Image 1 (cartoon, rainbow, N blue to C red):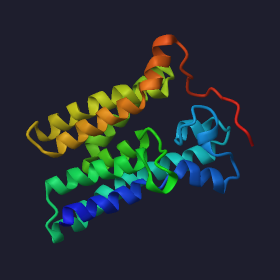
Image 2: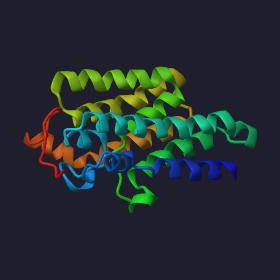
Image 3: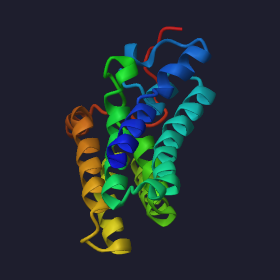
Amino acid sequence: MFNILFAIAAYLIGSLSFAVLVSKLFGLSDPRTYGSKNPGATNVLRSGNKKAAALTLLGDGFKGWLAVWLAQKFGPHYGVDDTGIALVTLAVFLGHLWPVFFRFVGGKGVATALGILLALNVWLGLATLATWLVVAFAFRYSSLAALVAALFAPFYYGLLFGTTDGILLAVVAMAALLIYRHRKNIGNLLAGKESRIGDKKKAAK
């Protein structure tokens, strides 16, 4: 019962779209209306406002971390087990992808996934972040870095906790969903049309 309640709470936390909220705070256009039309930090950066992009990144990452941390901290008192943590992991991620507060139009989940992984295990999160940074620095494609990091995250989890841990299934599902959300980016990468980090697309002020 409490596994489900914590998962519902996690979904609602995940449904807070910081890209939209921060853009409103800074008087910027809705990120769903320009660039890649994705409500995420990378697209907010295309507005030219680095502070807004940074706050979006931190907010999206924090909500993923917070939902899992709350479940780990308080869940055991209510009988929340590893299955519950796995459900919370997926629920907060799904909330970001399909937020109930924003007509189910959400982001691609990179920052939120990182926050989740950091909450599950700091070394897991840092290893995944390092993978993203290496690929992003080498190729300057945020999407490619996210895809490679997503592929490696379950592998890192398996190394740390083994392949029989139920939470691994949630990490695998999260990685698969993240890759699915980047399907258009994959096409653009293959066609040589993907925007590089630092590129700006026209955004209404």
